[in-house]
Image (cartoon, rainbow, N blue to C red; front, side, top):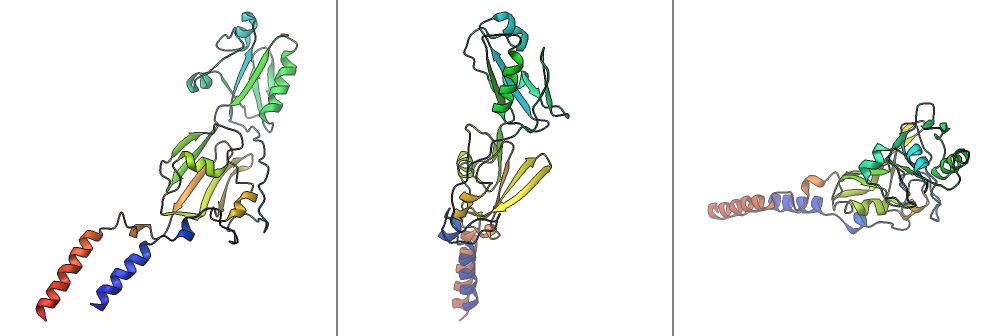
Length: 256
């Protein structure tokens, strides 16, 4: 009987997830990620700099149909335009290995290492030799964040706004699971030098002072499950175990 009670107690203890393990932004906890200051202060997000193999959606909007047809795959004759994801892919310009994009009648334009506003300004200066009344739109086509692991709805999600932080990204996937290890979240980020992996603690409010607090295009966020997830209450066959224990107790009492 003592052994059975100890087994039941052990299973219940392993399956418990405390409030300390699931609460975000707790004060006074030692960070497991990048070096952070003792007084967390939200950092300003860095602007994304275009990299080789990125695709840029570029439109030149002008009332002149001649120039609209010349600079765009699809002619635009008004000052407003809305594009679906499929049409955006069709008229996007890849960043070539030499770091440039090849624009019709303009030639190669430096793009790698520059922000979208910087590329927009370069294009406006280049197009000034051709047309007077125009507006340039530059967007990043591959503007997504991937959420994997123990989240409610894993998948790839569009970054719908500038300065999207990691909590807003997790909210798009329905938040992390009850048995997700919030103290050990990994992010994979593409850089010009290659992919880097960082691990950080979302239960520590000092994450606000981390350079990885804001999500960048093509980031992959991986929510690791806790080591004891196998024993979680909604997955472990407690009904079968309790039935077996009840039967064993009845048999023991009958023998006695």
